[in-house]
Image 1 (cartoon, rainbow, N blue to C red):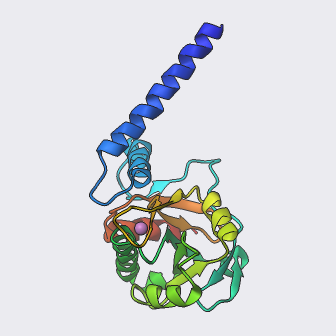
Image 2 (cartoon, rainbow, N blue to C red):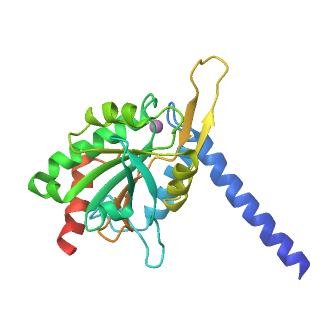
Length: 223
Ligand code: NI
């Protein structure tokens, strides 16, 4: 019996170690291991799905999202109740991000454009995982560069950590000796949140804007 437990434990260690190693080796340029790991898991997760939508549908019973307390780019305290009844496209990142965040927020903005009139039912949201530097003022300037209706959210480190936990977002500070400014390693999914505050679908990095828009439109029709 003990032997069997040991073997199973060993197999799990090998499996996760292998996944992490594959993620490490398969990293894109400038991509952290966390981002790469998330991408790999998402590709496994979405691998067996039919291809009509770019979004990975959330399996029944898997709850992501939910209550949060944050501060918006005008400095106003907000909770999930302020967004009740609305569809949201949500991305967690930070304004100092050199490449991944601007790319993904650009995708989100293009998906909003591709939605046409349906975009009125969707609010694009950027949540900072770097509250130390991402003040409401910094966010206001940043989000306005991507979409006129994009909302920026930040908060205390505890508030941000709680929101990230609810969405299973990974983030960590990375200080490289050759750089004066630290980086944030972070997972890089875009979430479609339904009017009930729960995640309906998630999009892996580098999803095509048109595919994202099509998946969002599918959810809007079903609502
Ligand atoms: Ni980023």
